[in-house]
Amino acid sequence: MTDHRTPAPTFAVVGHPNKGKSSIVATLSQNDSIAIALEPGTTRHSQAYDLTVDGDVLYTLVDTPGFQRPRQLLAWLEAHSLSASDRAETVAAFVNQHRDDPRFHDECELLTPLVEGAGIIYVVDGSVPYSAENESEMEILRWTGRPSLALINSIGADDYSEHWQSALGQFFQVVRKFDAVRAPFNQHLSLLKAFGQLEPAWEQVLDSAVLHLSGQRAQRKSQTARLIATALEEMMAWQEKRTLTAPQSEAHARDTLAEQLRQRWYQHQRKREQSLRLAIEALYQHHRVQRQEAELRWHSEHDLFSEGSRQAWGVSRTYLTTAGFGAGAIGGAGLDAITLGSSLGTGALVGGLIGAAGSYFYGDRLTLPVLKIGALRHGLQTASFGPVQDSQFGYVVLGRAVDHWWHIAHRNHAGRDPLDLEPSDSHWLDQLDSPHRQVIHRALTRCRKQRALSSEQRQQLAETLELAMDLYHQWRTAGG
Ligand SMILES: Nc1nc2c(ncn2[C@@H]2O[C@H](COP(=O)(O)OP(=O)(O)OP(=O)(O)O)[C@@H](O)[C@H]2O)c(=O)[nH]1
Ligand SMILES: [Mg+2]
Image 1: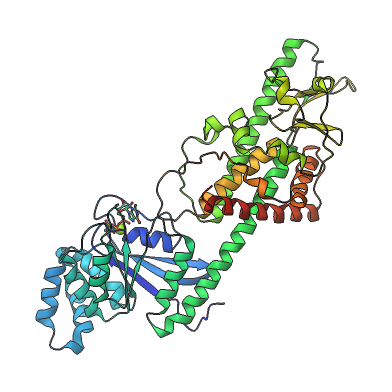
Image 2 (image 1 turned 135 degrees about the vertical axis):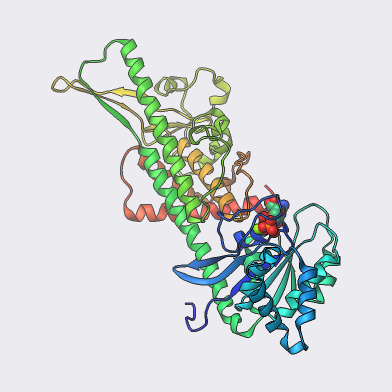
C-alpha cells in the first residue's frame, strides 16, 4: 500500500516548445486525452494529471507550456538575486511579479508548479542537435533548486543523444533516454525508479508505485482473459430465433427468412466483438484508439467470416487433430452432411475432416451456420440461425482478440497513430500444449452446443487463454 504519510510526488514536465512534454505526461500518466500536436504552443496552461491505481494516487505529472523567453527570464533573475543562497526565492519573486504579464505567461505557468515543490523532468529532443538556447532554460531550472532529471525523447530519426548526454549531465542529477511513443512498459518502471533516486523521501513511494503498476499490469492481463472467455462463450452459442406464424414451405420465403436471420446473426457477432474491443481498451485506459473504419466495417477484408480471416486466424488441421479428439478421415459420403463450399478439391479434403462426438469440423474452412426450421407445433414454427457448426469460428475470434489485446497492452498513451491490426500468417497457438488445447476446444464445443460452462470450466478457460496470451507475446517478441 502507498504510505499515506508521504504525499505522492509531483513532477513538472518542462522544456522547449514542441519537444514531447505532453507526450511524456500522457504516457506516464496513462492518459490518452492529453493534447499532443505538431504545432509548437499546443499546451497553453499547466495541468496536473494523477496516476492512480486502486484509488491511490501514485504520482502526479504536470504538463506545462514550453519556455518562450528563457534569456530575458534568466537576465531578470541575475539582476534581482543578491547571492547564490536566494536563488529559489528569486524565481518565486519572478513568478509573483509577472503573473499578469502576457510576455511571461508561459514562463509563469511552467515555473509555478516548481515553486510549489514539484520535481523537474526536463525534456529535450535527441533527434536535433544540442543548442545554446537550452542553456538558459537549464540554468533557470537549476536556480529553482528542485530535484531534477532530464529525458532525451527522440521525435525524429537522427540521433544526437550523446551530445545531449554530456551537456545535460552538467545540469541534471540523472539523464535518461525515453521515447514517449515507443518506450516499453519496463522502461516506464525503470524511469520511476530513477525518479525515486532524486530525493530520499520519494524513493519508497516510487518503489511502491512500481510494485503497484506491475501488479496492475498482471491484473489487466487476467481480466482481459476473462473478457475474451466471456465473449467466446456468448459468440459461440449465439442463435437468432424467430417464431413463424405461417409455415415457411415456399423456397423463396425460406430464403428471405434465412437472409434476415443471417444478417441479424452477423450483426450481433460483429457488435459483440466490438464491445470486447472497447472493454479491453477501457481496461488499459485507452479511450480514443482510432481504428481504420466504422465499427462494422473494421478491417473488412479480414471480416469475421471471410476466408481470409479464417486463413489468418483459424488453427491448422494439425492443431485440431492434437486438440484431443478422436481424429479420423471421413470418406466422400460424409461430405453431404456438412455445408461445405463446392469449390473444395477432393485432395484438400483427405484427412481434413475430423469426426468428433457426432459433430464435424473441417480444419481448412469456416463452416457457417444454417437456417433451421422446427416442426409445426400448435400451428407455430420456430426458425433459428446459429450457433456456429464448428469451432474454427471460435479460433478466429480468439486470434483476433488476442492480437488486439497485445497491441493495446503495448500501446503508450502518447500514441496517436491509428491502430492497424494486421492479420498474422502464423499459427502461434501451435505453441500451446495438448492439455491446454483440449481445454479451449472443449469449451468452444460446449458453447456452440449451447451447454453453459460451469464456473470451474469458465475459470479454466480464462486461465488457459491467459497462457495463450503469453505464448502470443513470446511469438511476437521472438520476431514472428
Ligand atoms: N515519433 C515520436 N514523436 C513524438 C514523440 N514525442 C513527441 N512526438 C511528436 O512531437 C510533437 C510534439 O509533441 P508534444 O507532446 O505535443 O510536445 P510538447 O512539448 O508538449 O509541445 P507544446 O505543448 O507545443 O510545447 C507531436 O507531433 C508528437 O507526436 C516520440 O517519442 N516519438
Ligand atoms: Mg504540450
